[in-house]
Length: 533
Length: 56
Image (cartoon, rainbow over all chains, first blue to last red; front, side, top):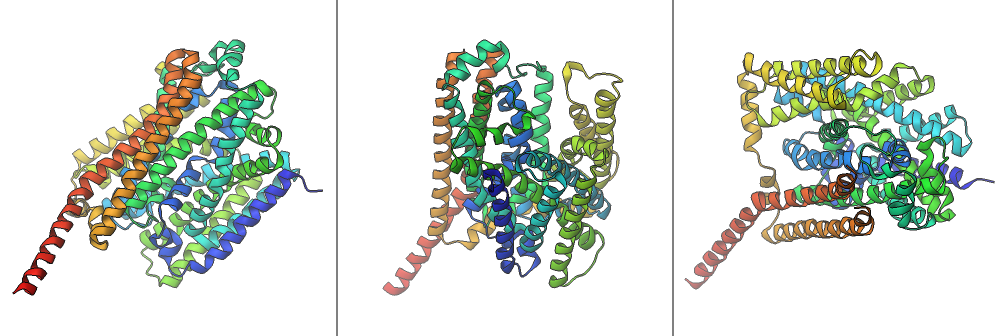
């Protein structure tokens, strides 16, 4: 007899393989594979962004911390929420107008340097593989417990599904399945979490029962960890800078069919993600009152799905968790593959390929990335855990100052960019090792090593650019880039009636999400926050 | 810190929704409002010209 979790596990993998195979027929040229021919409307952009928010770490690792430390910590330090808004409406929009298909496209062109492009791409590939592998390993262990299949077999099954899915459908697969699975992800927050709160005795469990058991339950520093405000602030900054330049977030702006769809997708997903994740965390917090002994704590959402709702909703919620894992890993691997084929082979290597060869190259790169990751996940080398711990911070320190300076500062040049990327990464890794691993010293106010590393990286970017000269080509690209406005192409492409219609629709969606946000968070504050004050 | 934590826990996600909305409205106003009005004026001029030609 197949259990609920087993059924959902195999069912979800089958959906991914099926969708990838079906969507392969839409892939004719490389633009289809990389940016789905820039045809995605508001719903698809919203769906794929929402799936990015609901990553595997949100539903497993972070949910586990919320279970023991309370919801306030992550509701306060979740800088990835504003990071995604900035990543889409600022970085993504600016890069989209240049018709880029990957982020290193912009980086190499802006600094007129293949060396800068290569360093940025290598940092990206190593960071993505490290971050992706650790998600796969974590998901493998978690599901091995629940599905009753050995870890190695889970990893191989995941790899086969991801291979068919990414090699066949490219960006089409990612965007479409993210949107389909978004429904299942909403169920985890909108159905399972409220059911857990109800089962634990209603809102009183959050306002009275848990605070009586532990008065620190609602402290942002954590119910038990008691982290300092300096640590909280640096975590917020880390997530903000990481997500605002994360390639799998910014590149979500590229498939949008126009600027209006991009803005609509950002607004809808921001409301959905903040709402669903907030309610999910409240439900996870209430689950501690139902069962304080869930082990490992990363399993809390799976436990909720199988214990507080019936099989139908529970099955959908487990599918949502599976979708979170598959969405995160597939997205990360697809950008590592893009980095290999598009950025390193085509751009840095200067290979002139036909469209058919480009497409084949992109697919072979996906094959190489998934195979590499599977082998790493099967052997679990110790070093990969360090790589994963550094991955988010390395993006924040190596990419953020270099990209923002490239967009905003004419004087920014390749020397500053190289110094910033290499100096930022090295200083972060050394500071992390010295403070966290070797215990040589500690940083004041409990701040994370990412903060001083970000200051060093920014200083190197500015200082390096000031003491060296900026080439004529770099300045010319900067001016050309600023001469293009994203709206120009949209305005030319549409009639006045179409523009009015799109303009009004975007405005109403923005007001609608704002109204819904005020109603939801205002309501939650009155219901839960006010009794606690 | 308790009260501040509770307020921040609910204000932070709402502030992100507000940020996204206001930024969108700013982009609409800055990049599109004037262009749409100009397009309307151009269309009215064009239809006036057609009417004038037909009248002549």
